[in-house]
Amino acid sequence: MPRRPKASEIAAVRTGQKSSAEDNPDHQQALTQWLRGQNAHVPAYSPTAVDVLGIATVVYSAAVVVRPDVLIGPSQLADSVDTRLLTRVMGVRDVGIGAAMVLAPAGAARQTALTARVLADWGDAVLFGARLRGRNNRWKVVGAAAGWGLLCGVAGIAAERRRR
Image (tube, rainbow, N blue to C red; front, side, top):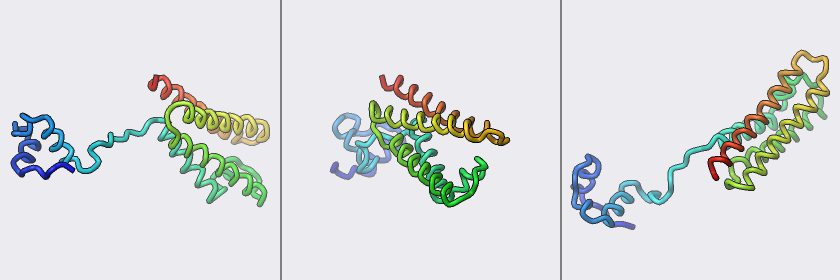
């Protein structure tokens, strides 16, 4: 741990004035670390679009697990014990995929999580589209599922291009 800087050194750095630390680069680095605290070596975290979409997926899906009505109502599905069970199963699946989107390291692992998210959403869109025939909300449900999958796919492609 670097030594505690003198009050005059701290004041000089905070006000942008020249200090004796500027004459010694090692001392300047130690002073900067001390001012930032113990986590000076940890870079600042900036969430990516994939992180935000993954977190949103986890939050929504957890809500579906806790309260299946979040999905059953807008989809106009028959509210039964079986529907609630399957809705919760979908929610658990999506919590896992969303968490993987956030926690997986950049590269193949994160791309796999994103591929799972896109395929799950597009599969949902196809099945809801086929099975919600005649309901006035059919295209809203299909659009939401397909659109979320598309959004996640585009974010994943953009993240991979930036990484390379």
